[in-house]
Length: 439
Image (cartoon, rainbow, N blue to C red; front, side, top):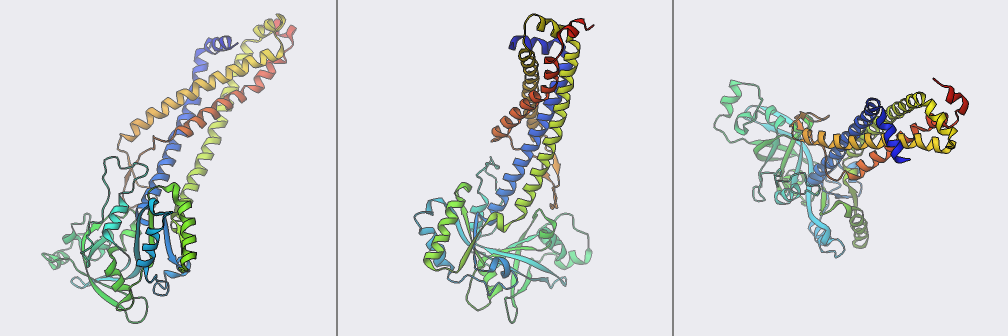
């Protein structure tokens, strides 16, 4: 029966080719979109984990209310907490980096050109942050090239600003920022001078002021962040936020070697917090960056919608092809029935032909999708995603997608087979005498 079904599919090669091509294009489209979604997921996850870790420990209540009152929700005696986490036998082998951070806001001013701007700042340990930036579980940086802070732990008063903030504060010339408006007055004022900003902040009472020397202006991806971001050494951030008071931190960031250990480590850290009576709460990166789940949910909805549309196309295309084949082979069906072939045999014959078309089309789609992925990844196509201020390369995730490809192949073959049910039943129910008289 399989041999006969194969010959019947090849009997009208042009029609079968068009049907299989429609299925192949649908399969290739699903593969490309699935690979794009996969790349978006691992790319976003990698970016978040490199900057914010897998887990973050906050003073209880800080996550909801602490951004407006950082002093009230600071973590005191944080070295003791970090030491307890690193020494715990159940998690120490899973840890990559455990480091304190300070998040703060204030006003940055450049008195040389009489300009100021509100800023969002982060204080961290540069060596820890550089190690976090090299996290690459999904091998997205095969050549080992990672972004670094460009800072050293000993450079207390030095740091990095966003390119947009550098433009606003007149630091284009000393920091060599591109795409800046030309101004002879600003250029002459900053010529030959080491860039210096005055940062003003404070958790309560009189504001604290420190001198800050930006060494580099970095692109942050999102324009809103570029226009307000300042990265500084942890001691300077603590001095700016807490002044002469107790030096605290606003969070302790935990980065793991593998993402799959996150649930187990979080459970153990919750137990450790209870045992040691630390007044802390633990959040994972999906809670700290809720946009991750929102964007991934949107991409999944788009993928599901495209799957339904392409599935309908496959159903109608295959059903039309099988219907035309049955119409042309009416006399042949009557002859087979007269020779003793039962209705089930006729039905199975056409269902098998539909399945063969699905196999040809789905297999061709997998090959077409792989070929398209190869050329797209090497075409250096640039685009600007939503929320980004600068273009990035369009790259599709080619490895680790075997499960998606197998699912697409199976689903399309099943849908092509199901599309043959109605034509196959019509062929099986034909009256033998009427079929033999058909011209």
